[in-house]
Image (cartoon, rainbow, N blue to C red; front, side, top):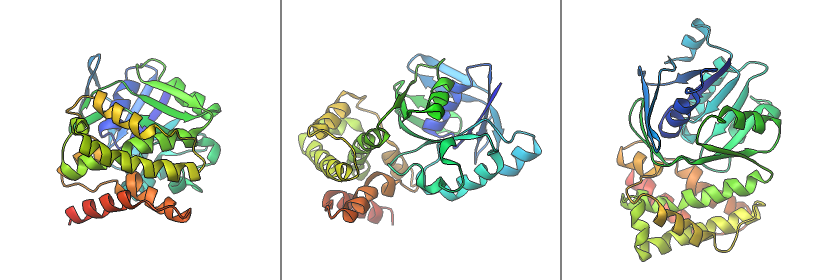
Length: 295
């Protein structure tokens, strides 16, 4: 039996928790703010359900004998890092591996010094999903996860062998993380105008998205990523091929009045660009406007 804890079962976290729980040999625990009895995910293959153990506090894990675990999957938003640490203190033992399924390109930095590097697995995730209520998720596409090559990455991939989610180990994780950031940074346009993916069909909106991605490409290359000149067009093609009603997490958070992962998705391009002497005015602009809109 492999014990797995998922911290933050929102759209992506709820999806992966439900799929992992489909294997009888997995003992899945979800670490939540708002408890629920059943996890139900409407997937491209049909609805799947699961009844994972639910923990509403780190103390309840220890009281219930649910820690430490073999694997922790961190799927919280980047602005929830402080709260995540309390869960990790309760869940992580000497052999625990920790996978970081988050947006951005700074997966490992917040956890350096707390988790040994060989037991830390950064993960780039592309699983379009939306949470409608605690324990209720719409998964629009099976999607994929990419992790660094190596023993820990291979062990992580094995957790998903029974699922339709494609998990791949890659030799150049830096490039994969920046390619995903290119997709994410363009999504700030959706959040700014509160329009779903279909807005990319409008050429004016698409060109603004391309401008955000061009800045991402320039900074990513300075960070060591191998990014092609046509990546902006690839991103737009992906948006145009997606379900036109699909809503990214930045858009969903703004619409719901929740904090947004602006720094991880657009601010990081500005910050890292400045360190290399590369201006990113379009990304700086959308960060400023979305921050002002949240006041």
